[in-house]
Image (cartoon, rainbow, N blue to C red; front, side, top):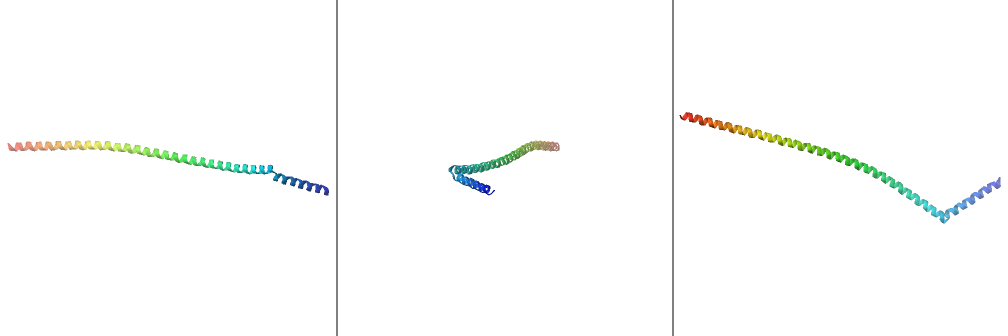
Amino acid sequence: PRSVDYLLIATRFRFFEDYVRLLNSPKSKHLQETHVLTMGRLVLVQQLVTDVSILRVKRQLIQAETNTLIDQTKDVYGDSQSIMKYAEALEQAYERLRGDVEALQDGVDLMDWREDARSEIASLRNAH
């Protein structure tokens, strides 16, 4: 049994020595560097994926803001259209009112003329 233990320890030690030798070998160093580089690249890729997802979210936010602005512009345009229609209606009402005022003025002038004519006729009658 003891010899088995020694054999096991020796094998383990031999394996350890081989492992250390392997670790120190140029090929191992190259593998380690490659592994570090690969891990570094993996981290970069993960960062890029995160950045891309952040950009996607930002793009969605910008799209939402753009849609809101478009809606608001439509609202403002709609309001401006209704304001224009209201202004046109006011202008038409003003024109009608001016026409009415002119007609009233004509009526007043006519009444004045009639009154003048009456007074002239009366003065002529009184003269005779």
